[in-house]
Image 1: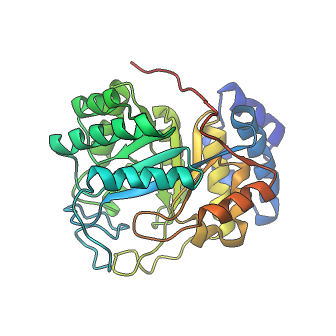
Image 2: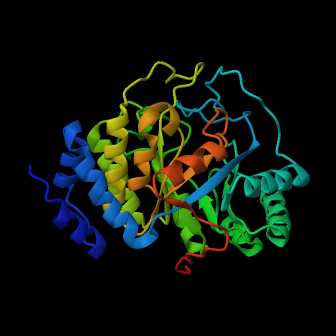
Length: 335
């Protein structure tokens, strides 16, 4: 079908969104037409975020030792990947990580744990750490701790946590192909608990796991329907020792089309070019900023990533600017 970019921009910004047929056409654009999609996505991105880029840093607060069988993950029970394995980091180590995040120019610090879900002691620990960080540093705090109850989410909020990350990862149809120890509905219920508690949601997915374009569309529309505040779009980084170690389905152009799709459907959400952008977008990484307004720096949970200084140069070379900790884009308060 013919895509009329000016009309798509207008409907996206009005909140009407785009149709599934248009989304399908975006994912199947000829590569020589991708620049048109990126320019249109930039018009949508600019209306909400200008040329600001939010830099985020991940801290692997507990590594490995996970009973879940997520096929993409180096920390899962199926993985034989050679990674560091350690219990939940103590307060001082997590606080030091937050200081390094500030030094890297980050506005958001994301503490992540492996495991099915947190114990009440884990939640109390994150609350204590968050209070210490907020007392010292101008950072947004995100916690990713697996399946959460509403009560646990409320406790995190009371301590100053602003966001909880819990990715839907893929479509409901495809989910059993990537994990059997919990369900898509389990993940969706955690998102609802986070929203009921008045926290901001950080939830997206991973492309490149063998899903179809229809699955990608399902995920993008699910993020829109759920009103995700922040949407990390991850691109599978195949890790030796995982069931997906030989997967190689993505091209840089496909990744850019996916980012455009998510931007058109979620015009006011933070869209983050997240895990795997370095290995999948390669030399086209800077173009991701036309659709995405946020990136991770200094690596991921068990894989390396673009270093902060290099990322800053990339952002500035593209005519964008790193969002400072003083810039406040206040979310709508929930519940």
